[in-house]
Image 1: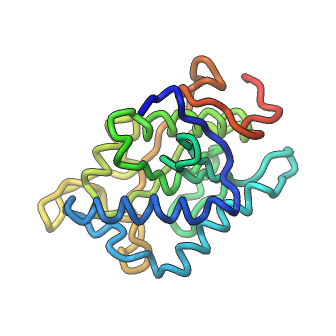
Image 2: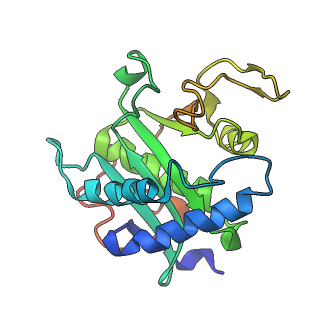
Amino acid sequence: MNSADLSIRRAGDDDVPGIIRLIDDAARWLRGQGTSQWAEPWPNAAEREKRVRRGIEVSRETGDDGHSPGVTWLVTDGDRPVATTYITRIPGAGLWTEDELKLRTVFLHRLVIDRRYAGLRLGERLIEWAGEWGRLAWRAEIMRIDVWTDNIRLHRYYRGRGFLYTDTPRVQADGTVRPDPRLPMDVYPSGVVLDRALKPVESWPDTGGFRLAGDSVPGIRRA
């Protein structure tokens, strides 16, 4: 597996089965990681697929600034999907305060990596690439994520990549140290939120070392 062979592009309708496979493979791996994340498609398989399809549809929409309100990015090794994420500038209902939404934001969702490509820092590279795209296209100032409440390992992953808990952590009933979720798990399971300021990165659009495929960066210039 050669990192230099990886390409990045916007996902299309035909990519939905491959994205679902990535999620299902990640779910099988998560079953041994001490978390309930994706133990079952949330809230069910049909709604999950609907969200994935909608994340691709919005890529074709255009706002007043000429850019879409969201983009599903796909990293491929040849024809094989190996990583994906969905970014949007539309906040999730009930998760963010009025003051937080005063900042132009990239909301990061569904960051999924093929475990066979572990060790290539694909998640970190995709976060950097998507964040810089959002900073330039949407003039975003900050990246925000909502993380599965009981997936403490995932919390650590993001905190190790510059994200901070938005809320103050405390000792929970299960002994873990994390903030209270902003929504109960039975309402929305990804209720713990983190954020990271966006700053210019070097070598755009080569950030992350991906080869560009399709119209990944039309009209984007460094600010």
